[in-house]
Length: 292
Image (cartoon, rainbow, N blue to C red; front, side):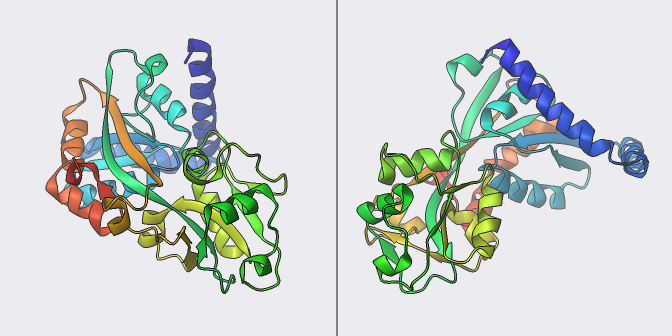
């Protein structure tokens, strides 16, 4: 990534933070009061930024860690794509970056390091209004995303138009959908494109007859009232992944400075501890340490 591109990304992040901080003066005063309290109690602050696909797992681990370590406060800045978070890390805006990919050659300044935390299964799900459809074949899923199948009745469901909720082409979820099921065929122009995974999940829950792909773990953690679909007769479960039957998974990793602060290093050690592994397993993730 060029310095110019880095500057654009960092500028966008800072602009977002400044905009949020300047909504009104009372918010600013509150922030100053919090900062003062933090300083007076010597509370250590760890700043984290993650792509939308990694924020859920990092917040899960952060919450557990802070419960045990009252002298640590973990702050999350606005989520962005992995590239943006890596740029923020290199510019000392954050201490840890959540990323869905390893450090690329163009991103590596020799001072940062990457380690995978877990595998996150992706599922294809529908709004709970969709009845009579529990499994899709490769051909059927491709036809839905291409706009060749447009009504659930064609798949054994009710007479209702299919609403396709999709992600941008450069997002990990869409890349994996293409790799395992969709191929290179164009997506229907009628698909609703949602930039963040959280937006897709929220939209799917409130939009009758919709379909979309997102994190299995998120559906477990939030106990989402959705219909999880099997693909080619294989359900999106951890058991099917570990046996090699279900392959649509993405990696969730973290990137940090090779010389982190003591507080940052302690939290990272917690992430890869047995306790961290247990938290991941209990919430639908597959810890990388358990499959190495």
